[in-house]
Image 1 (cartoon, helix red, strand yellow):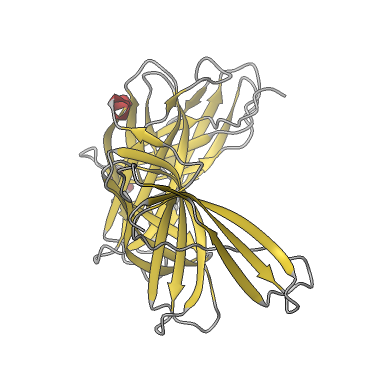
Image 2: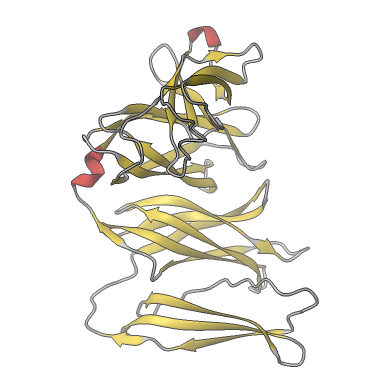
Length: 363
């Protein structure tokens, strides 16, 4: 059709050998664009003893909307696959041509063999797709045994849970003062950034997107996550930790996007935690430092970030770890796994400590 279809319902049925329905799922595609081909991946957890014989897909035509002047803003290209620690991951670059940042975008990733037959797939979610930009995606997939992947297609869905955030000055609420990442000889990547909250308000759930690519611009790794709290006017160092690359990836480029969080509230009115000066251990794989809790109450967990800079101030390594419980008015010592380039005599170790939103304060 030459019209947008809105709220298209797709019913997926799993049937046994007798044609009896043993599982059912109804999915909703918020927009199906004119002449657009899309795909979906559905998995079922069946009760013990049940076995699927056939699968039926029923599409209920959505509402035709010829007035809505809107085209598909999200396209995934340069697709491929990697063998990661947890299994096969289907990867690619998601491109957003709109001046809007989309949230809660569903990813349906499908793998084909050389004959064009579907041999597996997976579903994922990316919480933010930044406006007028691209970022890597990676979806864990189930692939049939003894099958070789010849082609990967990844279909992004704007769903009922998605929102579109208009661009504006909120992008300027955080200054990324500098950032850099490095890879070592053991398939590890780390590094980080120095971030500054330019507002006098608490920022909650700042989002980071990290993409590692090889020389051919193939996505080897795509990871995302949150920096739960950045206090008013705070400057902090941030690291996603030491990340493991797929064995066949030679990292050439790392891209990072920081999506500033929302103005929010928290149960504490100030930051009660302090990070001491990190010291590298003799073997050079951990930075040891003290975390001080200045509050008259226990804090159940914290995130400790270490960023390593060289004599020129350039970031050349980093790491992070969760601390566990910190008792009231006391300190704990944590060991943060790190990697870096250079000799430790010429390096500076910087640390910050963050509090998760779901932390428990008190006994």
